[in-house]
Image 1: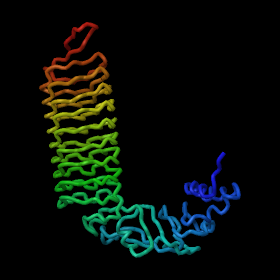
Image 2: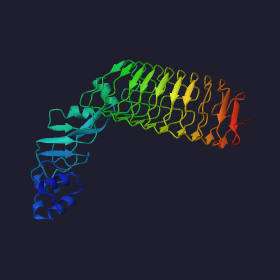
Image 3: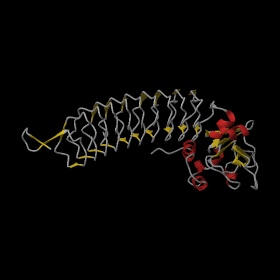
Image 4: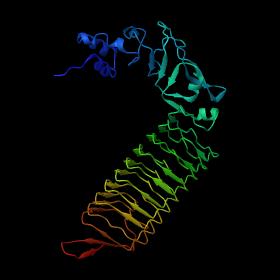
Length: 384
């Protein structure tokens, strides 16, 4: 049986959670003695009492704002200026804190989230920040060009920037916060870096001039109202890693004529493509089991839609007002059709409803639509 040597146990111990874990390891056997002395950085937050166990630390990692800095100067945001809402106050993290042990480090690495102004305030020191937000306050102070060190664009950062027509996003950015580009009505194009893993709700809401978007493979979910009311949006590439398209995601994208929903998608939310007036054709992947409420409501040019055999329920007013829809095949997997589902679909002359459907709610079909339903084992159909 193989055993873990001293080097590899050090690698394992990097993932310990408490100082007691490290202390207990020292008593396991002789070869694990002095494990903590091998570290040149602290794998856990340290205090004035526990730093004595790590004798050879050269780099200090700070995971939380309240972590001990051992007397090293670090300016962090403390409050807003009462006389100027756009001016944030910064102060030394050690203020009002008694420093018992002081130690000079080769480098200090900060893992907790800070805004860009904090990075500027600490310029010239041996401090490296790993999680940097570009906030609305930062933008008003430093401008629309996002610095290369930024890792996330904070909520509402560019909200209502009507003069913004294009923007370069650094490859360091991994997150777009909620509403960060909302109501940027002249934003025509944006390249979302491949490292971006999250796009918040209402991110591009009401970006009237945005014509096309390529969503990177790293995105797994499109949040609510993410591209809603993007009236010029004609082309969207949804990557194969996306599994959820949330409510109102493409609501009132009037210029969107077609969209390919990848087979990875398992859920399409309420009002998702509501009032997409130019949408002509949609293929729903077999991974979807439920078509949500008003999902394609008032898509007046929708003429072709394929519902897969995986779908068991079609929601309330799902295709309400799709006046150009002339033909639809409801698969035998469907058991319920919601109220008003095909109401106001005036070109839908006839529809076959399979025997699997046990609930057809009120006003489901237009008055003039001939609804056919197989009633026995023969080829005869009865007309409702």
